Length: 101
Ligand code: SF4
Ligand code: SF4
Image (tube, rainbow, N blue to C red; front, side, top):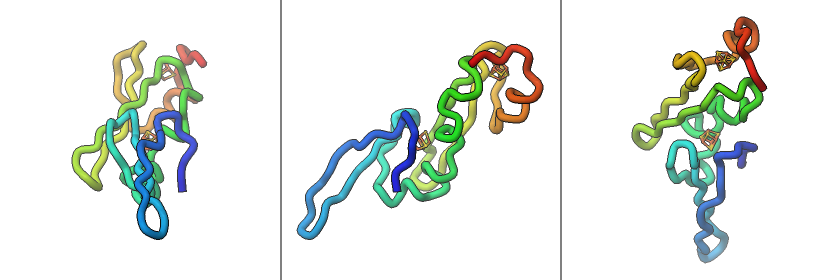
């Protein structure tokens, strides 16, 4: 299944004898993903970036790093306060008076 994320793009379709292979690209993490990878926790399924997609604050910038196949790190940088969050929602939504949407 594909996910509603602005960083997820269809990269290439490779025709096979009976069907086709779709390759996607995570533009944020600069990684190519097979269609079945998208449903893995290390790829889109477990990724908080798609859940936020700029909905929290304009100062919150998502980062995704694919360290090796099957391993990724997702975090967010607050450019206003220069801090890194693994899970920003609680602080940003409940406690930050500088939040801008
Ligand atoms: S891994 Fe995350 S940021 Fe990358 S395309 Fe999938 S949901 Fe979007
Ligand atoms: S800490 Fe505040 S300013 Fe920074 S990203 Fe979160 S809501 Fe925005």
